[in-house]
Amino acid sequence: MKLSQLLRVIGARCPQDPDITALACDSREVVPGALFVAMEGVRADGRAYLSDALDRGAAAVVCRPPLPQGVPGAEADHPRAALALLAAEFYGHPARGLTLIAVTGTKGKTTTAHMLRDILTTAGHKTGMIGTLGAYIGREKLFDAPNTTPEPIALHRTLRQMADAGCTHVVLEASSQAMKLRRLHGLAFAAGLFLNLSPDHIGGVGEHADFAEYRACKAALFRQCRRAVGNADDPSWPAMAAQVPPGAPAATFGFGPGTDLRGLACTPHPDRPLSTLLTVEGTAEPYPVPLPGAFNGEDALAAVALCQALGVEDRAVRAGLAGVCVPGRAQRVAVPAPYTVLIDYAHNGGSFRALLSALREHRPRRILLVFGAGGDRPKMRRTDMARAAAQGADFAVLTADNPRSEPVEAICADIAAALGDLPHELVPDRREAIFRALDLAGPGDVVALLGKGHEEYIEERGVRRPFSDQGTVAEYFAAR
Image 1 (cartoon, rainbow, N blue to C red):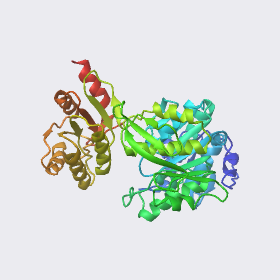
Image 2: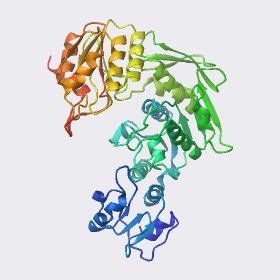
Image 3: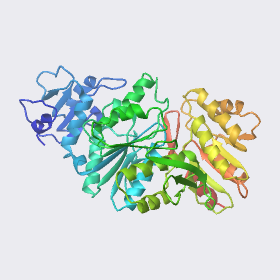
Image 4: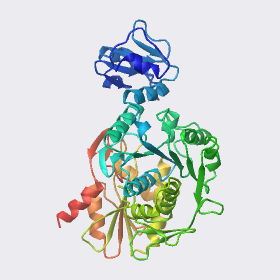
C-alpha cells in the first residue's frame, strides 16, 4: 500500500510515496518497509525510538511534531488516534462489513461477552469475540490477548481475519483504558452495552486520575454507538446515556421498576447444581443459566436485553444462555468424584464474597478453597480476600498465585493473619495445594480453586512458568 493512501485518512501528505508493507507502534516489531507510528506511552515517548525504527528499515514515520528532517511521513498531534485510523485503512476497513457490539463495565464484561457470543452463534450468526481471554471465532480460539481491548494494529488485523472467515458479528470487550488510549477511535458500533461502574483502575501508573475520569472514559464509548442498552440500576447509567448520539435508541434493563426489561429474581436452579434461574417480567418461563449466583444472573439479564434490542429470537437467547461456558469464570471441571471442582478468577474481596455467597445458596456440605494472592500488589487486597473466605468457606489451603518478587510464604502469612478461626493449611506449591484439597474433599463438597482462572502460568521473580489449575486437576485424577 502506498504511503499517500494511508496518510489521506489522517489528512496528511508527504512528498515521498514509498510502499508500506506493515504497520508498527513498537520499534522492536519494525520490519523493512513498515510505517512506524511513534505513540506517546505510559513510561516513554515513542519519539525516543525513531532512530531505532529507522535503523530497522522503517520506510516512514508518523509522530508528534516535529517530523525529523528528511524522513518520509507525517506529523500528528494525536498519534494514538492517527494509528487507529491508519490501521483501519491498512487492513481494508474490516469493521464496515461487521456488526460490532461493545460491552463495557467494571465487572462482568467477559462473562457477558461469552453469553452474547453463544446466543448470536445459536441464532445462526458466525460470531467473533475479542476480550480478556483472547480472540475467538465461535469457540475456536485464535490467540491470547495482552490487553482486554487490543491496540489498533492487532484489533484491525483481527477484525480482518474474522471478516475473511465469514463472521457477520463481533462482540468486543471495551475497557476504559482502550477509550483513554483511543484504541477504538473511528469505529462505529451497532450497539453498546453498559453493565455497571465502581471504582477501579484509578491512581496507578497509566490508569485514571480519579473516578470522574474513569466514568468519562466509559461514557465516551457511547458516542460511537448507534444503539445503547444500559443497566438502569447503576447510578452511572445517566452519564452513559447522555453520550448516546441524538436519535439513537437507548433501552434499559435492571431489577428495579421502570426499566424496559425488568428482572424479577435470580434463584438457584432446583435440578442443576451451581446453575441459576433468571426470572424476567412478562416472560412465561425463566431463563436457565449454567453459572451460580445473582451476579451471573445480572449478566444474563444484560445479554437478554441487548439481544432483544437487536431482534434476536427468544428461542436462540434461551438456547445460547443454556450452553454458555466461560473459561475460568465459575467454571466447573468434570471429575470422577462425588464432589464439585470449580475454577474462578476471583482475586479480590468483592469477587470472593459474591462467589462464596452464590455457592452457599446451593447448600454444599463444605466449601474448600485453594487460593493465594498476587505479590507486589496492595496488601489490603489479600486481607479482604481472607476476610471474605473466613465468612463464606469451611477450609482453606493457602498457596501461590503470582508471587512476583515476594516470597509465597510471606504473602500467605498476611492472608493467614486475617483468616480468624477458619481452619487452613499452608502448601506453597500450587500443584501440591490442589492435590491436598482434592484429597480432603468428600461427597457433597465444593472445591474452589480461586485466583488464577483462565491464566496458564505462575509469575515468580520475573519469569512466567506454565501452570494450569484445570490441567492439575486432570493430572490428579489420571494418577488415581
